[in-house]
Image (cartoon, rainbow, N blue to C red):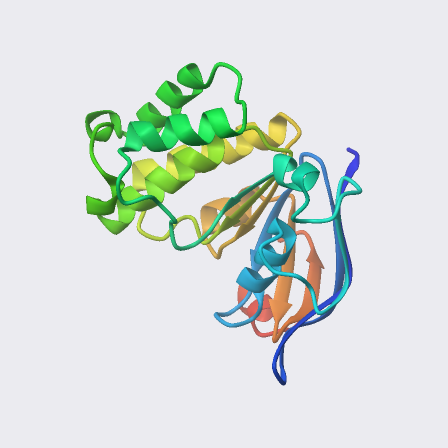
Length: 227
């Protein structure tokens, strides 16, 4: 597997508060990585920096050699935030077509049909996601994240609000993406994904406290910053 993501001595400070302390790791194509930590540990801040939505205070991030936020890096990266960002005046079908065409997705109609069926959204295609429940908005966000091509998939707490069929569909989609060579990084404590992940990155108080397999390691120890 080729090296895809490099994070080197990255920090992020907000005024006098360091949300992320000097932190380094790398991820290869096709890896499934679980990013775990308590609320406020720095997971979302880290994902936003990798996605190019926030600049590091210090350090360096490279995606296939490119700086996050550049056109090349954005073309490689699909970021699904924990709070779905959707347009108020577009239907679900219009959201999908807009994102797919924006990223020049080949055969996007076929992929769209598959994703919509996977998340049981066939009857909501003409509805406005602005009127959806939290779970339906989450499914919509996931469809939009998967309908576009990517080499790096970043997902922040995707299982919140999902029913069991939705969680199973998401797990299968992430496995399929990794099998196709996409690096998948997911901020979650969901046991189902932790069991499938190739690797776990533990963050405590903005520091990387664990980098390795989940086998034989207690999640509570990782969350508490213990190796």
